[in-house]
Length: 179
Image (cartoon, rainbow, N blue to C red; front, side, top):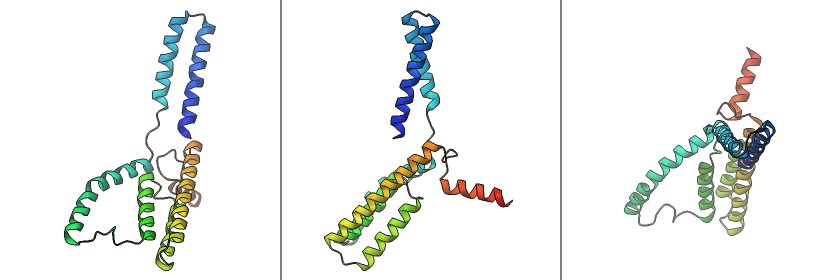
């Protein structure tokens, strides 16, 4: 969503630069070149630094990419059946949800933790069948999608402007009130 807004903003900036140069009476070749340079300069200034959420997800994924093959090789040599082969369908779904959360970087979202708690409760106390597996899968997808939308809104509104999650921003504001 944010990338679409940025593309639209770049197009609007390009059109403004071309119209300004046309109003100034410059020749068309020079004005197009100047407009292109202005748009490139503006796009370099518009580049936002990665948020803390994205940086954390990239670091975790880097570690997992290096460690996972080693763990799987050791596990197969120690046990005949691997860890993943001994899991039930609902446990595999919960494991996949955890990896999807790590991949997306929404680890600090309260919606993710509430969803994970519900899913874990279902895995522990409900029988392992296809219906529960699909239910856990849908709960996981919905929670990731809702967390994605809330993060996009926070990024768009500038709540996440200091590269920290919104909870820490609220705590800082609250601590200022009581001091």
